[in-house]
Length: 100
Image (cartoon, rainbow, N blue to C red; front, side, top):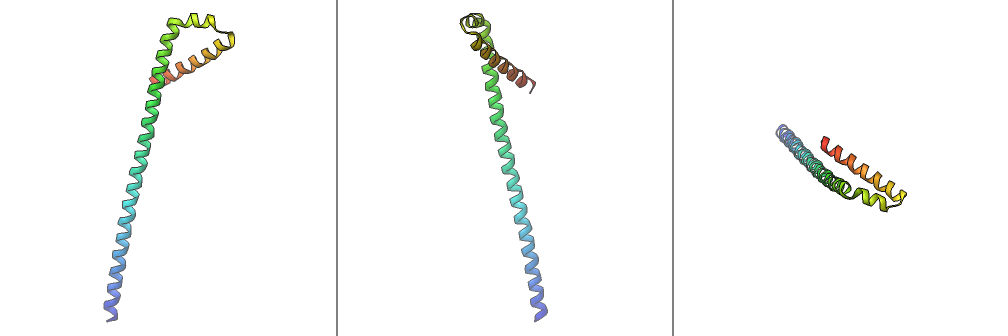
């Protein structure tokens, strides 16, 4: 009687261990999927930001080429320098986006 109960307890323990391993594997895979989704979502947001920055940069470049001289003449030296720095930053962003 005791041998039979011992085997039954051993089998139940082994089944429990197997269920635990399957359960932990399931949640490990689920967490990896969630992490991949999060990375993909953040990459998409970054890609959208770069695309929009590139578009703004291109539009600004066109406008400065068309009207830049007039705008620079009307602005004070300080405002002109700030605009030039912003323009250079946008150009750098655009060039960096082209490299992707």
